[in-house]
Image 1: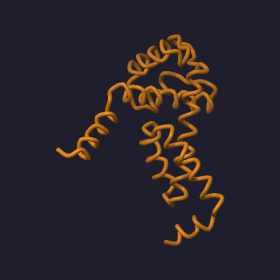
Image 2: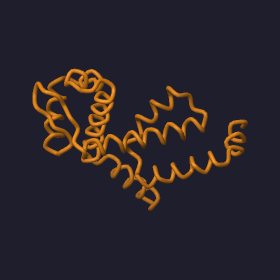
Image 3: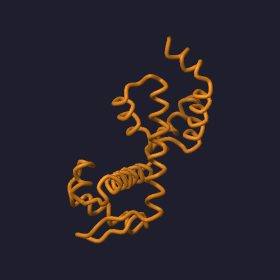
Image 4: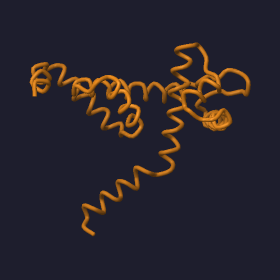
Length: 153
């Protein structure tokens, strides 16, 4: 096997490590809780269950895990509040989401498709990649002729 294939296999393996998958799921929960709190002022297990499309007992287990990790304060049958740590993670995901949406918008991808794609990849990108995307978007916006030229292709 050549080294190019080996590196690709190593990349695939690294991308599918179970720890990262678990944290992606946790990030999804934190993002939804943050959005619900912003929208309604509170989040319930039932709301989270509905938006995550998982059972209420699964939500309860994850809430307990997030509570143990210091991401939120959770008492069964009471409100769910994000800690500063949990809010920081949710804010980071929201920022990544906005950057990716803006990038897809520049590419001319429709909003619904862009939003779906963003939900699929926002947790997977390295912070360095996000930083470079942000810089690239800033560059493009400072040079609108480049965007116009691209869109006319």
